[in-house]
Length: 238
Image (cartoon, rainbow, N blue to C red; front, side, top):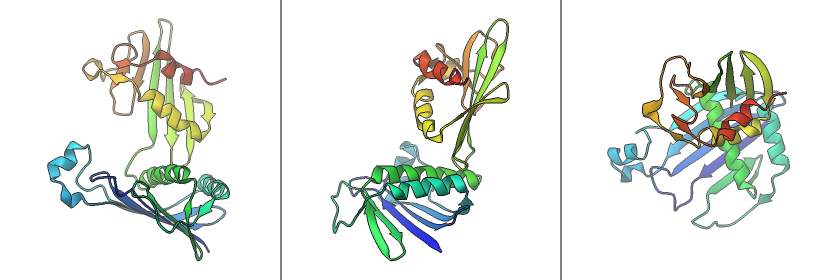
């Protein structure tokens, strides 16, 4: 069996409630990755419940998940392993995160730890989706014009490593999954004027954006962001 164990812990300088540790056990085959994913938050006993809640956390966010992900994840992990340089430090700085990737009888610290952190974060999201703890991404954009309304939907799945755009329920673009983070930065970087958002079907001319909670934000009124950040994505299809 092709077994891996990945252990990660935030640096000693990371305070609670943000400090956490992750252990990921993987069984890799050609068709799938069987996994056991465990996330534990550290040193929260040093804080009061209100201090944890004030930072935007809930009181118990530790998770222990099991499942299996498909070939897209197999390919992603294999490509990451190919471009990983192994290092074997005897100690690390207190400002450094702790890493240990174990395969067979060898344990190493990956030099490209930033890419491994992205891998673990995306794997976490995929496991949450697969275990029905979070829904896949869905963002709607309606372009309301006098003659017609075009209904766009951006659909992103970490479990399947898919990111696509539909227009009036027809797929018009299958993006490279790696572009999803850029999309999220563009679509969530604006100022949201919640008192101007609404739940009813958009009718006013313009671009209306909905983020999965039923609330619509009209670009330029309820959503203040550079228009090109919204428009460039819906005009990216052939």
